[in-house]
Amino acid sequence: MSDVAQAQPLKRRRPFPWGRVLLYFMLAIFMISVLVPFYWMLRTSLMTFGEIVAYPPRLVPKDWFNLSAYQKLFEQMQFIWGIRNSLIISTIVVVLTVTFSTLGSYAVARMRFPGKAWFMRGVIVVYMFPAVMLMIPMFVIMSRVRMTGTGGTRDVVGLILVYLTQTMPVAIYMLSSYFKTVPEEIEEAGIIDGCTRWSVIYRITIPLSVPAIASVALYTFMIAWNEYMFAFILLKAKETLTLPIAFYRIFGQFNTAWDMVMAAAIVISVPVIIAFLASEKSFAQGLTAGGVKG
Amino acid sequence: MAVLGQTKQARDARLAYLLILPTVLIIGGLVFYPVIYNVWLSFHQVTTGNLGETAPFVGLGNYRYVIKDIERFLPALRTTFVYSITGMLLSLGVGLIASLLLNAKFRARGVARGIMLFPYAAPTIAMAQIFKWIVQPNGLVNWLLMQANIIPEPRAWLTERGLALPAVLLFQTWKYFPFCMLMILARLQAVDQTLYEAAEVDGANAWQRFLHITLPELRYVLLTVGLLRLIWNFNKFDDIWLLTGGSSGTMVLPVLTYQYSFGLNNFGWGAANAMILALLLTVFLYFYMKEVVE
Image (cartoon, rainbow over all chains, first blue to last red; front, side, top):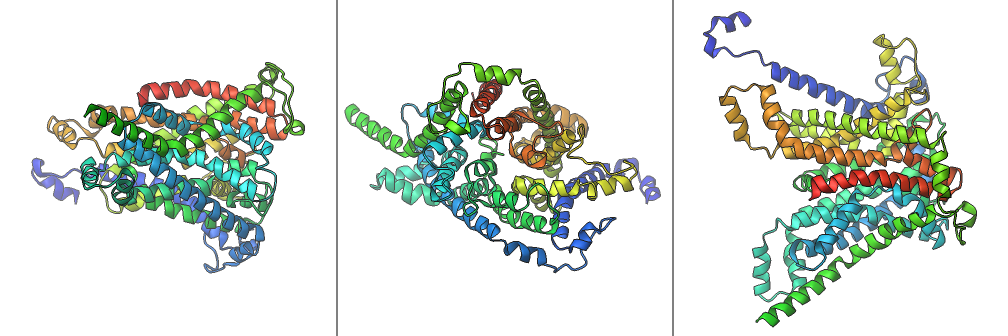
C-alpha cells in the first residue's frame, strides 16, 4: 500500500491518518474506562457466590440468566420500601419544583419588577451554595419542629422541603433562560387578542416550553433520586428510607453479598441513567449559562 | 396615558411578585434562615442532649476548639485543599480531552457521548459500591495490575494511607469528568468554524489551531467549570464518606463537620467547622461572581 502511495505524485499523496488513529485510540480508552466498571457490576450481579470469589476473577458469568441475586434483593422488604419511598418523594419534588419554577422563571424572563436583579443573584448564590453548609442547621431545625426522628410522614415532608432548596435554583436557571428564547411577539399577539397574563402563560408559554419543562422534570427527578446526604441525616425509620439509604443500610460497611450489592446498584442506576440521557440533549443550550449541579 | 401605563406596570410587578413568591419563601426560609441559624449555632454549645432547649453561649469557644484540634482539623483542611484542587484539575483536563474527542466527526458519536455520561448520571452510592468492589484486594484492579507486573501483591487501595487519597481522586475524576465534558463541548460546538478554515489556509497545524483558536475560545468556559468543580469538590460529603468514611488520610472538612456533629455529638463544633468552610468558600464564590456572573 505504502509503495503505491509513494509512487503517486507528491501533491496527491494522502498522508497516513495519524489523527484518526489517535482519535479512535483515545476513544477506546475512554469507552473501556467508563464501561468496564459497569460491565463488572452487571457480571457480578449474575454470578453465584462460588463464581464471585473465584481467583483469578472470571470474566463472564456461567449463566447470563442467573437472576437469583435480583430475586433475593426483591425479597428484602427494606429495598421494596426504598423504591416506593424514592418514587413518591422524587415525584412530589418534581411536581412542586416544576410548578414553582415555571411561575418564577416566567416572571424573571418576561416581566419587569424592582428587585429582579437581586432575586436572580440570590438564585445563583443558592445554586452554588454547598449543601453541606445546611447539614447541621437543617438537622437541628428539623429536630426542633419535629420533622426528623419521628419515623413517619413528617420526616418525609421535611426531606421534601429540603430537596426543594436543591432543585429550585437549577430549575429557575434552566427555565428562565429557555423562556427568554420563546419569541415575545407570540405572547404579545395573545395579549392583543384579549388574553390575560395568566392565560398567556397557560395557553402559550407553557405549551411552547414542554421540552424544556420535561428536561427540568427529569433532571429534578435525578437530583431527588440520587440524593444521599440529607436523606442519611434526616431519615431514621426503616419504613421511610429512600433507596440510597436503604441500599447503604442493607449492605453496611462489611458484607460479602456482592452479587446482591451489584444487583441493587443496577436497579438504582438504570432509571436515572435513562432519565438523564433523555433530558440532557434538550438542555444543552442552557448548559453553559446554567449548568448542572453535582 | 402615563398614569395608565404606570398602573399597568404596577399591576405587572404585583403579579411578578406573586409568581416568585414560592421561590422566595423556599430560598429564604430553607436556605438563608438555616445559614443564619448556623452562625448562631457556632457560638453556642449545642449537643444531642439539648437540641430542643436553650443552649449556653460560648462565644468563640467552638472556633477555638476546632482550630486547635491539631489531630483532626488541620489535616482535614490540608486534605480538603489537595482533594478539591487536584480533583478539579483532573476532571477538567480529562473532560477537555473527552470534549475534543466528541467534537470530532465519527460514526456513533452520539452513543459515545451518551456512554461517557453514565458515571455522572448514576447515583453516587451505586458508583461508590462498584468502585469499592473493583479495588478490593482480590478484585479486578489488583488482579489486572498484578498481571501487568505493575504491583507484586494486592494492595488495599481504600484503606492504605497514601493510596486512599489518590484512589478517591481517581473516583472523583471518573465520576465528574462528564460534567466538564458536557459544558466544554457545548461551548466547542459554538466556535465559529470559519476561524479554523482561515487558520488552515494560513498553514496552521492542528496543534497551533488548538493553541491559538480553541483554547482562547474556551477560556471562559474552562474558568467557569473549573470554579464550579472547585467549589463543589470543596464541599463534597457523599463521595469520600461512602468510599472511606474519611479514614486513611482522606478526612476532609465536610466529613469532619459530620463527625463533630453526629460522631462526637457536638453541633456547635460542627457548625463552627462549617462556618470556616463557608469563609474559605466565600473567597471562591467571590471570584465566581466577579469573573463569571458579572
